[in-house]
Length: 302
Image 1 (cartoon, helix red, strand yellow):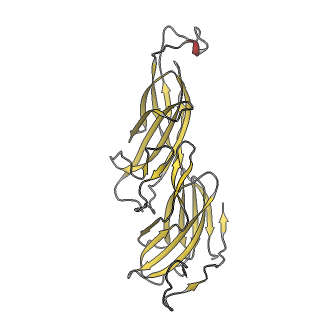
Image 2 (cartoon, helix red, strand yellow; image 1 turned 90 degrees about the horizontal axis):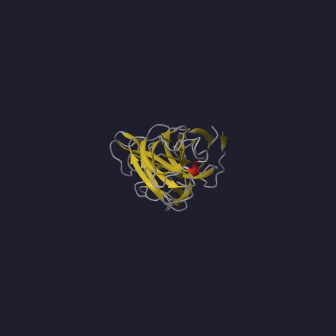
């Protein structure tokens, strides 16, 4: 994000007013040009071994949102949204901060798609019932800068950075049956909103799940809001055959995540059917039973 103000004032030079506070015209406004850049870089956070050995249809593009605040004030005095990274604001002399939020939308559409952006303290995921898992475009970038508008404001640069973590589950094994679909659910709370001011998780959802088709040993991926410090996301994986019968299940794949990081979790998925104490007992002979207290060994490589 770049803010640049260019102005000339014949009666107010640096020599005449070394302290710019002496050189203020009450009704003067400067044209502030705001350019938002995005740093999409994510680092490799972890590569874990649980067991010892899709993008939405359509062209997606970045959407840029910018809010201007008086310094130390949480109420915006200006806001703009665009499919382009350039903004222009007319601002009186003074101290300000600019907040940028960037996300993906279908081509040519500016309205909210993945996140509600009307409350900066709770930038909430759009749809719990239709949770958009296994979708790399569900990603948010955010950052802010403080700046002063004066007669000769220098350029200010801010780059919006990822506010989510990404995990990917890779199967160590292969199915012995024809896979129909995979269902992913979160047995514990999953982060669902971010405070854009603090860039910290502000709200969580429970009872979230999604499903998608089989894609080889790549089981699933999801982007979740995260803080700077590492925390664990519990993921339940269920695999169904072409007849809709449950054939494999992992109750809790515990995945360490950090904001801006990518975690690879490698696990035996298709050859394990753990018993779920919350489900009705299945008839005997219905698969391989695994003790739910089975002690997984996690090898975390950072």
